[in-house]
Image: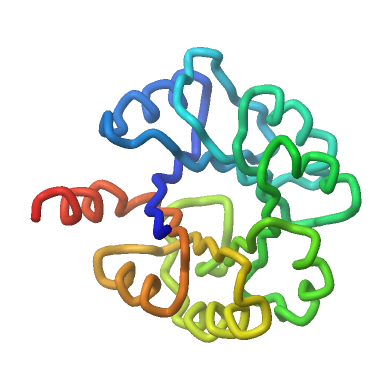
Length: 186
């Protein structure tokens, strides 16, 4: 099933609450980028995934599982994360400049791969990198049953092409409302 998931990069607890409240009511799932800060509110009543863009994601994973994360995305995978797979899906985040061959040995131990389609992660609004199309095709060829998330620079101009290339989930930040509007006003 193809998904378009809104991305939230909160600056504070209040910012997180406001951004979640501003999502359309029909949106029941969101993506949250977690940097070094630990921003959360028990007011959140929607399902979510967390992208743990931190130095030591294993130290934070349990806390996010307890908070209800349905998916964990990490850029460093080891056996620590296999214990969470019965509670949440675990995904491996792969930066656009890292060779996929570096990560291939770990893809049998995760539930999905999370391909970054921008060079600089941790901020919204960065330019889209067209190399992502070849990366999606490579993962689909080598791991045909592994769902692929794509994150970064997704807009009205490229989301359909990403779906056609084989992406299963698109994580959309800055352009989410535009894409959502185009999908719901047909």
